[in-house]
Amino acid sequence: MKIALIGAGNVATCLGPRLKEAGHEITAVYSRTVESARVLADRLGAKYTTDLEAVPASDAAIVMLKDDALKELAPAISDSLNDTLLLHTAGSVSMDIWYTAGAMKYGVLYPMQTFSKTSVIDWSQVPLFIEGSSDQTLNSIRELALTVSPDVTVLSSEGRKKLHLAAVFTCNFSNHMYAIAEQLLAAEGVPFRVMLPLVRETARKVETMSPKDAQTGPAIRGDRKVIDEHLALLKDNPEYAELYRLISTDINKNI
Image 1: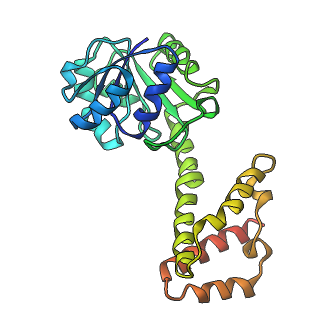
Image 2: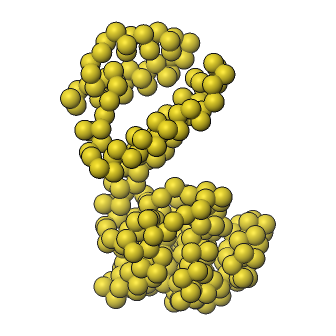
Image 3: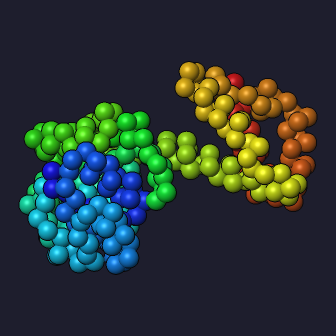
């Protein structure tokens, strides 16, 4: 397919090369900033632009913008590319944003993974969740998705929102806990890397058992003495103490 990329951020920087590797032609990269568009376009052998009206006719346009920018630009994208299959990659934005914007053919291609511009992604391990405005459009989206990953699932907008919520707990909140741990360790001159074997083993366990069954620690044991000692250590960080208390309570009530 001939595909235009609307956006040049983390998702586009990871997905664009995968699409090219799969044999698709990237016709253009749009970004509000020239430098971001140019860097990715040069990598993909495509033209770059900061003008939506300059994006050439393509089979599909994949819109990879922050949610607020997607909502703001959807009407303009639909006006400029009305004969194009319009897809967005957002976890929490309904497919109906395209209908409201007046699009003719549209859908969603949501890769459930965390991305950064320096990431090396094994796309064969990335689940893609798709939705389409009609059966024919959905089939086209499925064909495109299968060139990116073998793991493709049709999911409604409401289901995708709940999936995204689960991903926030799984990834974003877990990573915030790592950041807190890094801060606590730094106060003692200990590098965060000492936690990496624990991080890897925790992730490995939930590949073979339920996360609930994999739970360990003082909260699941109901060890009040250790919990109180930890809370005392957090007396200078009351916000972390409150997090510790809330999470420990939630773990313990699920025994």
